[in-house]
Image (cartoon, rainbow, N blue to C red; front, side):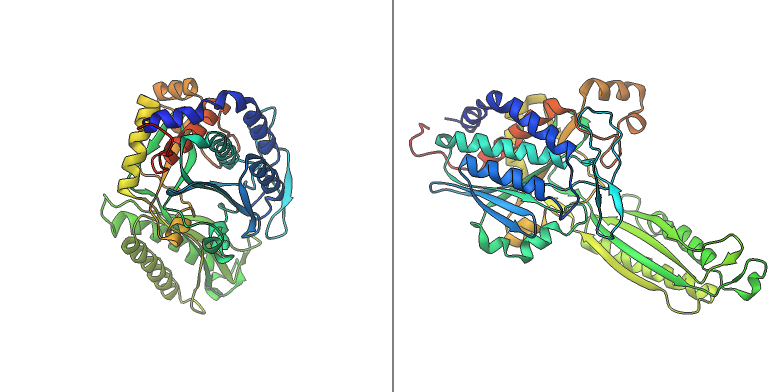
Length: 426
């Protein structure tokens, strides 16, 4: 039996569970939970994994879990999905749209929606887990299905590792993950090497001297100071790096002052830096510090700026050999619907898990936009304007063929490493 034959034997059961998976997805979409609050999601996933015959390790890093299905001697494959939602008010108009709200980590009441597609990731992995268990005669080895909390705040993988993930489950040989992205549903895209950026979040506070708005000569204006920093930070990319070097520096928030006629004492900036290799990352972060300090010195700031490094996401760099294997499997399984995806500016914490195990991995894109809608926007030249992207309040994967394709992709990837059963014919 070929690899495709064995995968097809497992996937033959998809027709029989499709309706159930779709209902599960709709329910999950309607009941999103923020990072580290995924209690309902985790409970529903765990009970199903047990029913499928998995040994389930729960409450790793809070709500994280791993299902283990040992099926004879052979390689161990890890498949991962993230579970958390976003503080976004959903505007999709779907009949199963979220109307939920919750209290975030800072104590604020916020709307909650699966505006990034993690509900699709969970459902696809749950479907693959069920089919792999039912089709265990087609493979040999150990399958780990990992459901991770809190990808959005960037600390979910770390918490699972801190709470002993690597000691609580069998050591995998390879890891796989996927993410819905705004491409036509039914398509999958792989990329060897750099795929997702590293991301550094920085909080900068600059200090001036407050005064009445009518007497600027008595002040050291932190609003002007912050404004000059915002402008100058853009020159890192435009003037300190080669045009071929992909880097993004974004100032996403500037907070200062309470009145138009009061010059405040300080200003706060929130900065996000995205890079693809460690040397560039170090150079850009050093430039941020240099520019902030220089602008404060130029303005006569009353004290040194405070520069605090916040959440950091690692880069996602796909293993070349593993990616080739998966790309070949996808080409066989999906034909012209499989291809190569371009470098992405988004970030993920998935790679911390295989890095902690010391194993190779690959992470691919799963299209999720209605193909006709996408093609019409492409013909108009309005994809950027008309196709909602992840984190938009209007973003939601089209249910099919996204769900089927995601299940099929996980199964196809797993079979690139799992062994042929002893009873199977070559």
